[in-house]
Length: 361
Image 1 (cartoon, rainbow, N blue to C red):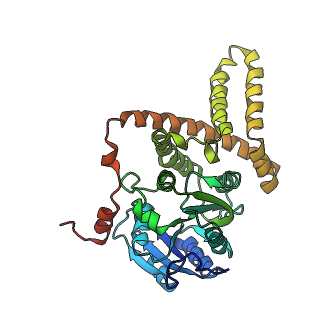
Image 2: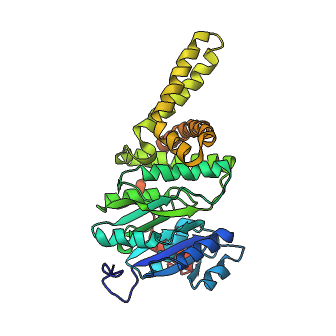
Image 3: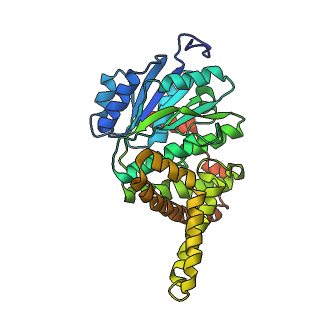
């Protein structure tokens, strides 16, 4: 395999690996160490320190990374944009600081880019062996793995945990929209929609996998899923109606499951006065199990029956608060209709100048 077969200039790398980091800790060390041990070598490494107070910047230098600073905590989107501005590779390869690539992850990514020159972006998934062992972290990461492994290869979205995008297109689109998403949110999903609008092709490469280190806890997971993902994604979908595709987290079975969960909640208090309603609740529960039978079988195969049983109720809880997020997002979208879209558009060049301390004057 010729690693530079796509590059217009062989003196430049195929991939510019861009990693935003904020107090990365041991996970960041493992992230850089894994990249350093990769089979594929045609890359440059750019780390953007987003105001860390630990030794992340020193660690990056020890691994030979080209180190940049945001001069304050601006979020991963802004950090990735800053790294992209100095990148030399044909493709920007984004990797999260708490993700550990496999030895062949970058090689698999490069193989997709080489064999399908029409592709503008490609992304992978978490693997099925997350680092954190607590139940919530195992559930969340395995759920992500399952959703991506069963999604359509011809994707309509993008994922920046481990994904690559053609640098020229990324810069043309203005990078991640950090005005709209100033904190970690769905800026990568939004980028995917914009890539597709521009006529670009995005591929979900299921063989491209990384190990996730984040130790999710229930409270923080629900907060992130509602406020940083569910609500903004709902608003985005209402702006991009073509985003409602039968794929990933938007499958018809998922939407039906949300309705079934709320129907159960409505029927529950009625059973006190109408005991015969119990059979209807049992029917709805059976429908929920049937609609999600494949994912529950997946949990059982990976972690056993006890884990799968707990995962069922965790999954139903997810459907419950996803319904709340969708409702809130719909209300917020309606309230923002009067705002001109142009006022919310991201200006990459101006933000870049602010990041590096250059005046517009």
